[in-house]
Image (tube, rainbow, N blue to C red; front, side, top):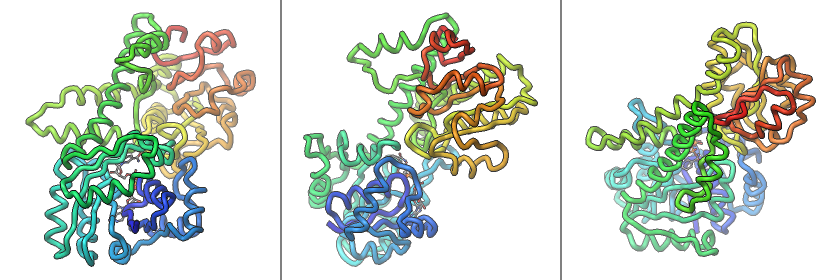
Length: 434
Ligand code: NAD
């Protein structure tokens, strides 16, 4: 099948590459000339496990190409995916300017029947809106189908190649059949392709992210209460996760959720309620998370005092989660800014997000070459992302390097008893042995 994917970011690049891997001819389009030039040089602008090899293979086989010119891409394709960003607007709503601009460009370039697919996360009703927008810009026949994307950064290739489900929303039977054909190779193990109306499909994505964010804020609130009352959230989590109605996934307490999706999608869903549906649960989810992102700084100040002038803190982990270089809304940004505001110095390390951190913080913080280098003479270590390589460090070496053997662990990656035995003052989230 001949496909274009407009928007070559975390979603578009993975989707385009995986469609090419499935044997389709794919053109990835982006307005960012630097990004396209980088990709044309065979370099990948983002870190996503498995992606680079797959891009290289499909480019070499002639199934995948990159361009900034949308018109020929649209003309050459029967299916055009919209995967541009939908960042947060001024009032918490999703900003649709890039989606609308893309739809207008597609309409202008059409030369026959096209299937236009919204993969960007868009508010309920957007597919209908796009239909009228495209109709006013083109005389050619077309269908607009909603196809929300559920991939997780850090495992995006894997998720795309073997999705738990594919959701297709729309009422154009021919277009739906075509997309089913496109997705068939990805659901060989029997996971469903679910067809529904476009509005329900659009809602699926927000409901999924809102549910996951709710789970995180829920366990974070339980963790706070555990800490207050002398219970251990690690034990509590273990016990409740054995209940099949609850399950073990996504109930790990930490320093709050971040990333390019949960924060903005929760806010966009609240905004979709307007004044008619209060969305009080999601407002609370958001409030709990904002508080949680500051919990480590509260602990640091509780130990070292409110003024941190003259102290240096080591930070391990900057990305909003492991296996990505994405720092959008990462708790690390809130924590580091708060430390800097209190007069502290920060020396940070992340296995993949250092270039992104340098873009965000510039010379305001120091950057370590290696995780151990960050510790040299630091008053304490803060752990903000649970990269695997932080899980089994040389604690003896850490003790030697740190000025004080103090760890504030925003991801609960160590056993509090071990750390106490090793002579550390250890501050996890919601656990008794801190
Ligand atoms: P991103 O910011 O990484 O990429 C978006 C790309 O779109 C950028 O490269 C930008 O230059 C490009 N773009 C903007 N306007 C354009 C235009 N008019 N023409 C061509 N390109 C244009 O964003 P992302 O993380 O890939 O997210 C894209 C969408 O997918 C969002 O709606 C997001 O909510 C959704 N989504 C993201 C994830 C994720 O894990 N990142 C998962 C599921 C869904």
